[in-house]
Amino acid sequence: MLTLHPDILVKNGKKQFAVLPYEEFVALQERLADAEDLLDLRKAKRAEGKSRSIPLAEVKRQLRAS
Image 1 (cartoon, rainbow, N blue to C red):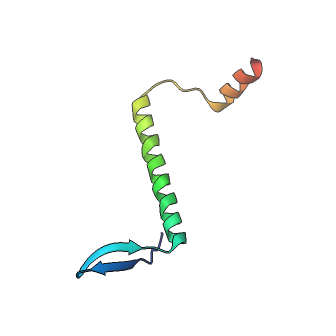
Image 2: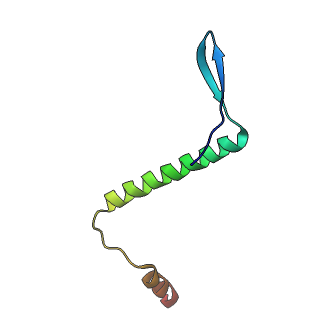
């Protein structure tokens, strides 16, 4: 679990900004990128449907043969 330690900046009594330590910001960016990658993978798998796939070992064998 990612623990964040934001400093909340207030203007006219309303929360305006959250400031994070840089290390936490970078970790949050990495988590978001991973989540986006997972969503893209799931989308691609749905689009692929029941298409035939080739096992990695077969691809390697075919590449050695060419």
